[in-house]
Image 1 (cartoon, rainbow over the protein chains, first blue to last red):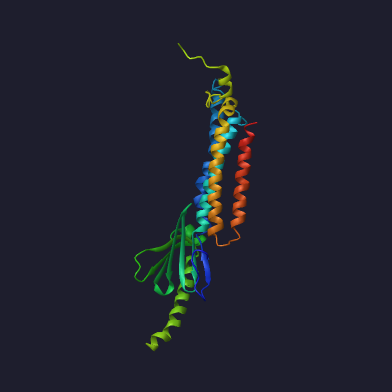
Image 2 (image 1 turned 120 degrees about the vertical axis):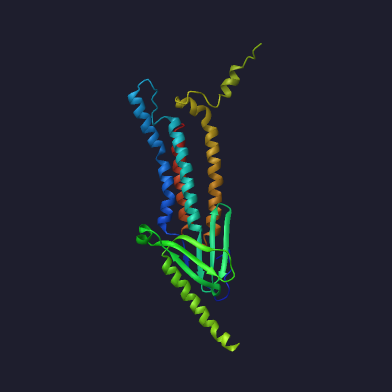
Amino acid sequence: MEEVDLQPGEHVIISVRQHPFVLALRLLPFFALSLVPSILFGLYSGITAVLPEVSAVSSSSSAVQFLTGAWWLFIWMGGFLTFTRYYLTVWNITNFRIVYIQQHGLFSREVSSFLLLRVQDVTTEIHGIVATLIGYGKLHVDTAGHKEEFAMHGIAHPQLVRDIIMDQVAVLQHANEPDKAGI
Amino acid sequence: MEPVLDPRFEQQFPPLFELPLIDGEVFMISAAPLLLLAVFSVWVVFTLACGYHWLKYSHRSWVAVPALGTHVFVSGTLMLYMLAGLR
């Protein structure tokens, strides 16, 4: 991880993103918008069929082709930006800590990091039939002395991620026990 | 006295938007180069910004290069489609 230097002996156990279904839901409006030119042209063709006095526009008209291409290009760019945000937003769970990287937009990025030893509670929430069947939900991590909420919505397989976090927390606590006994 | 416009000037600098827009050919000849330049400028800035983010923050993921390649290919195809309207 170039943004966060790993400590000696630290390695990434798993990188977690939102479920691809969440991405598909976010891309749905772009798909719908891409159909707008076809719908408008269909409506216009219908009107010209009923009212012949209205001037007809050919779909091969240069203006229509140019503007339709521009419309689709901007929709593609919006969709690609959505995919970029989706892919670059990630939880990296290492054997020492969790690094939460949020890509809000272009040139808008937030990186949070907290030690696994500070984790007090890990909660998963799965609501709804679709989320249950497909397997995505919310993962919420409470940390000691940290008021900020660490939560990711629409995460894929949240129970699996919760188990990985809790297993690693148990390993770290077990490793720290001899030190406590020594005190 | 009304100003007299030199016909050569009119020929060299045609009006940007000639109504009615229904006449696509007239619209294209006059406004297309400016529109194309605007769209292309936005696309270049967007692509450079996305490329920067993918290459810097994707942590050497194998997805970065195919994603950028797909973006350039699809948007290039769409721009060619737009350009075909200028023929």
